[in-house]
Structure formats: C-alpha cells, structure tokens
Image (tube, rainbow, N blue to C red):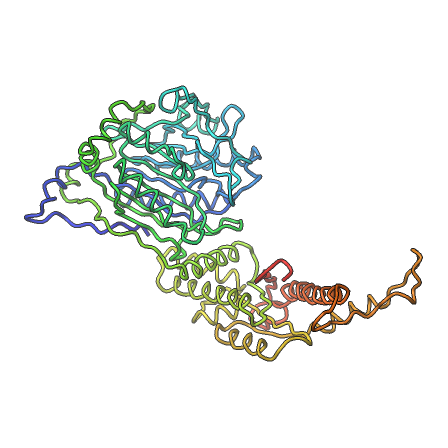
Length: 573
C-alpha cells in the first residue's frame, strides 16, 4: 500500500500556515517494486499497480526502479533483440490503457538507438511518449556489469550542458498507438507548466560530477532517480548521505526509487524508496520489511520552499546565473495540485531517515532473498546439511527468519500481499488448502536438515544440530557417511596398474587419517580422506534433496518435487 509521510493542515498561529496555503504544492510518488528478470507480464502488472496507487493518492508524477520493465538482472538476455521488443510491447500496453492519463510516468527499460543499446528512462504522459533519457554513467564494478550490455550516452565535453537532443524513431507498435513518429532522446528536463523535472539513474548519483548538480543549477526543481541498487551491509547509509547532500547543497526535491527483493540472480535489492526536500527526508519506504511486491511512497512537497531555499543561497545563485542550459521538452501539464486541493493540503513533514542495525540487515536481507528465490523457483523448499557449527546453524536460522516473515505477512500484510503470499505458500508446499498455523509449522514444510555424521563426528555437534532443528521446527534427519567413504577407499584399494613401470604390488592402497601429520605424505593422505568426506556429503545432499519430499509427504500430497540445496560455508560443502 502507498505510504505517505504524516501531513497536517495548518493551524491558527502556525507561522507556516500562510506559506503552506499559498505555496505550489505537488504530490509525487516513488516506489519499491519486486521485479523478476524477463517476467514481462508480472513486471508490467506491478508497474500498473504502482501507477494506479499513485493516481489514487492524487499524484501527478510517478517514478520507478531502473530497468523495471525487464528486471535488472537479465544479464546476456539484454543482448537479444527479443528482450527489447518485449519491453516495447509492455510499454505499449501502458500507453493503450488510461493509466498515464493525468500523470507523468517515468519508466525504466532498455532502448536501442542507432544500433546501440542504452539503459533508459522513458517518460510517458496522457498516452504519449514525452522522451527517452539514456543513462550517462554505467555501473561496472563490484557486482555490476552494465557495460557488457549497454553503452553510456556520449556527451561531447566541449558542448554546453549535456549537448543537443537527437530524434528517436519509435517502434511500429508505439507509433500506431500514439501517432508519434519520433521523440527526443538525450539528457533533458521536462518543462511542465509550473516546474521543471529531470532524471538521474542509480550510479549517476554516486559519481563526483553527478547530473543533479548541473540540473539544479539550471532551475530543475524535481529530480527522479530510478535505481537498481543491491543490498550491501550499511550501503543504505551511503545512499542517504548522497541524497541528503545533493538536496542540502543544491536544494530541490529528490525522489529515489529502487527494486526490492531477488530478481533471479545472487543479489538482493533492498528498496528504501525515498523523497527528500532541501536536505530533509519527507517520506521513506521500507528497506526489507513486508513481502508486498508493490510499495508506493507518496510525498506532498512545496516548490515554493525549494525556490526560497535556492534564492537565499547567494553563492549558489551566482553559479546558477552562468550555468549551462539543459534542453527542455515542454508538456502542457501542471504538476502542482489544483488550488482548491492546496487549500486543504500541507507539505509532508520531515523526519529522520530510518536505518536498521547491522544485525537486522543480516537477518532481513538474506531471508528476503531466500523467499523470493524459493517461491519463483518451482521447488518444494530447502535442504541443508546441518553440522551443528556456526555456518550451517546461521543458515538454518535465516530460513527460520524467512518463515517468520511469511507468516507475519499473512497476518499483517495488505490484502493484495496476503493473497499473493498465501498462494505462494500453497504452491511451494503443494498443499492447495494449507494455511500455516505458525512459522514453525511452515518451517517443517519447507526446510529439511540432515546431520551427516562420520566416525570423526562428536556428540556435541550432533546434539547442537538436533536442538536447533527442534527450536525452528524443521524436518531433521541424520545419516552416516562412513559407508560412502569406505566404499571410495575400497574402490581405490582395488585399483589395478597396467603400465608405467610401477609394479602393482608396490602401490600403496590404504591411506590413513593422522591426528598430527608429521610430513607432506601424511598430510596428503589426510587431505584426500577429508575431501572424500566433503564430496560424499555434497553428493548425498543432492540425492536427499531430490527424494525427501517423495519420502516424507505421506498422504498430505502426492505432487512430488525436490528441494534446493543450501551451501553454508565454502564451495566444498
């Protein structure tokens, strides 16, 4: 559901009362969307839902995450023509409906221009395309590989501003709907009847010469940032500092949108859509909480406050007076509220941004990823070799947190979210009428653990594994891998030597585990036997993951299925 910062009407004697009534108030929307790579139908449904909610809240502008039409993590599918074609089909579906009537919409999708692929924002209004804004600075470090798929928009350093606009030839499916042949492509500001609005995309905010600097100096009052920023411990603080700094120095309104959840890859996008005005946070969405796939964040902002802030900063005004001009694309549309609505409205009140503790981030980020990956994988749950050590125990605890969050959403989520989550639970568990009575019962349906003992295992680790499994309610089992290890050793001992000048009777055939190896030869034996244990556990884990639903379902369901194997430490496990 949409979230709006607390608002209050001006009261008698309120010094801000006159300013609030006479100011130019605009109601704007940003959002967190849980998109999925290449899920064009589902992604479009979530985009449509966010626009509907923004319109229902009285907003005149809506921005969304980076590459929201396709999903961010499409990887090499971005290099396929079909991906771009399906993206335009999704955009055409938006234009064919009444969703863009009376609201300016900023949509993230890939676009090919002159046989070059760009990561773009496509701006829509009243069933027409306003323009295409390509990304200037691509993320290409850490987990990001955008320059494998896209090209940065070229800006001639000798040109003032961001250079002249080019003409983009719309695909036939859009031409036939809008009657437009071409639209502007490049770096531009949308010139509405009452303000100017422009765009940044994710990485551009992080750069030393971020576009918002030149845009704000040229009089752009509202900047929207559609982002695809993944969770990294304490990274949200960096984002907040950057947005706060951008609006505290330059003034203005800054809307930040992000994906939220796992969209098919190894990354978890941690949402936290925000609205800032003049260095203060006036609305903030969740970073992890809730499992709703659509979260719209609404803020009512005063453009008069922006103008007053900038005009009173004389040094900033001196720079703005000689700033290069950014190309404008004019629209016959007002972003501010009608005068009658302004009389009964007030700007969203600022409040300090909310931040989770590091421990909360560790619990909420991975557990959210686990749920998204499971519900979209078509599998029955997770299988975890539970050794009783810190690594596997932490992994089990994260699955338990996932189950807690699912059951909590079923009780406290929005009607849409409760319906979606319950359908996901029933599809995962293959039980058409199942409603989990508590999170432990759900954990027993979606998590199987196994203590894989060997002759070197101790009673303490076995007891710890059993105790943790009991506490979280999962299905816990145990096996001995000694037979597998012995079988491998016997197979090695039965080796025959046929050539190479080595006599078969001279070959050593019985490696032994040494508590304190004295030389490299004894260490080599230890490593070989330890590796057999690790590989035996791995093979058995995949074998059990395939069969455990079949082995344990009983009469509750005969739908079959298999489990996803969780690795709790290194690749050996």
